Image 1 (cartoon, rainbow, N blue to C red):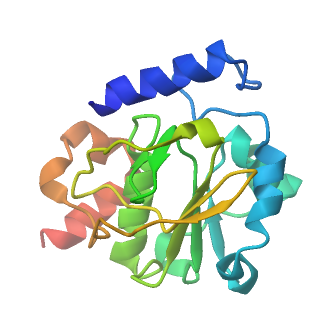
Image 2 (cartoon, one colour):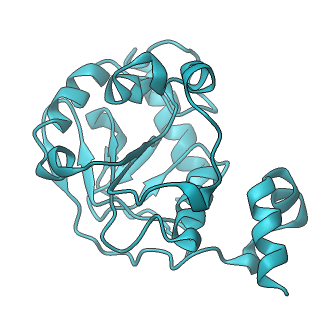
Length: 205
């Protein structure tokens, strides 16, 4: 099954079973779900979470409880935070990603923009993400599937999957991306993200 089909299947199922929460409909989004707060509480049991000093978290609704406070919302980040270049950031211990669908091999399907994978790759390029950086997601149990999910070379896999019911240690079937695969990026994508353009110029010198 292709990723586009997987996304539609999960989005449809979450709406049909009324698992989805605001903002709705969830199509085209990282879907918010009933039990998101409980999944965030379950995450606190994870040893890697307790040890992490620097966490990179996605800004989507279902992970709001993971981010905890106002300064971790997009609006709050612009109000209380300051813009920094990737090279000025501290090394990241743990990455929290939003997901549409996952499996226990660690495969992940996002909403289709590819930005989470690019952020991971940029982190690798600047040395703030390395092979020891753990990756995880919080999802509803219905988003955890048993079938195979196609993974591309630039897709980062998950180390942990957290639901309201349990913590799943992924089987780590897939290799982690080594950085940015420039041959897979079109000009529009590079132009849309300023840091990509700057890094590209440095790499081609």
